[in-house]
Figure 1 (cartoon, rainbow, N blue to C red):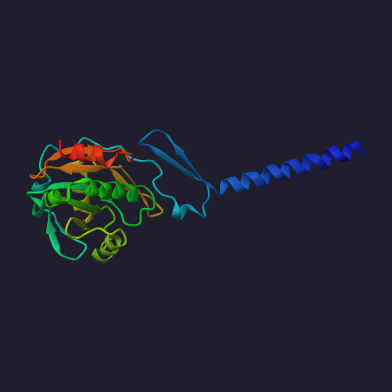
Figure 2: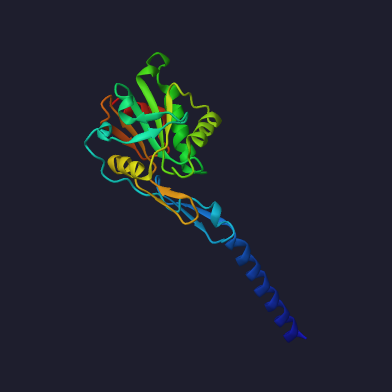
Length: 222
């Protein structure tokens, strides 16, 4: 009897262990490596379409030239054609994002909005915030306009741009922003806010998602 009881208990333990494994394999584990690196592990094929940002890509060295040397033509959230040199004369706060990003991009935009609030209102006209999509296939002007409305981004101080894949890649290379498209349609990319002077030259860059608006303002007014 004791022999059968031991066998029964062993079977129960094995079944319980298998159930724990199956349950854990369907969960997403977020591991924080350090202040800037995030690793996401997702073992569930069912949830693969929702996974994002497998690992953050570090930035590369940026160009010493003005981004206004680029001859690319973009469309803003209203469908108007825009050249980067249209921003000459203002200090620019620029980030490359994509509208369907569920994790890092909203944090970057939130940091930029906090910076906007930190700039004295009577000086705000000297600055402009620019978001450039790295997902031009899906981020149409209409999609970007919806994105701006949902996040209360004032068109007087915010411009959202969509361009060709080549133009996106060219700008990304110039500011040292790295990105790649994943098989599930999400993007792995650098976490980067770039500050430009009135001539389109890079003043400073922030890769830290936890920067305070005070620190960002100091970087902008370097």
